[in-house]
Image (cartoon, rainbow, N blue to C red; front, side, top):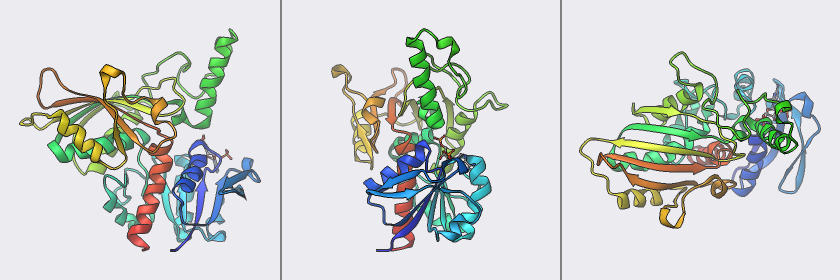
Length: 344
Ligand code: A2P
């Protein structure tokens, strides 16, 4: 089997570090690892399969010099905008974790369990975009339900962990909690989020748009439609909560009018879908929570119930580790599928 020279742009970040762990877990066919970050991190060490690799500076020429075959980008949209082209010119496949290319028509936006064949469109630009973390875990459960009954509308409220804002987001929550116990929370740094995040809930993720939704909410709407190839009506309310890792979502689906939901049928199709697990026993207090999903590659679904007034409306709760399922694992799954489709 062919082995690949794999670059990770943003190798020292929250998603970058997780990418190495996921590649190890999936026994990725690696020939060489090329960890890339800013000049600040030159010489830092990355451990991969008990071997140390030095972090190199991201430059225009680093992809060509290191004969990179696959480049995962996870260092922010402006870095992808500036540097992805050099990776493509060097002949590498770019798998981009930022929002920069996601809605570009020529760039496939892929969740491998949902729209694997869109990967074949990579040839147009050399780039495959990894969707937004909240979108990925939502479409994973929407897909089997859309196939079953046909979705007309989705209403979702998210409960998003601070790791969505990278390592700095996690540090800010931890520091604010420590300052709270030291009676100096008022002096604590509040830089990563619009407000204090410790002991708080902030109904804003990403910046405001002119239509009164936030950019994160519009990502969930536009990306879901692109991945499912369907103009489903969607409304999202994205909320940041003081959880370190794993996003939760309360989802309401309205199916086509003539549908009379059978909850057992719903559970069966979800259970049969790849990488979804149903935990649904309210009377015994069993349902998905961040402490269950963190460090796993599964999207957990529970609290499944039919609406009290309409037979075609379903409510449920959906939880996944957004650093893995919503970023690193999805990227690695894209790469493995690409290898299967294009290199075998
Ligand atoms: P560095 O550690 O050298 O700053 P996170 O998502 O956890 O905030 O991490 C962001 C990642 O993006 C880090 O690996 C960071 O590297 C990287 N990064 C930020 N700015 C640049 C840049 N100008 N060039 C290359 N990598 C960058």
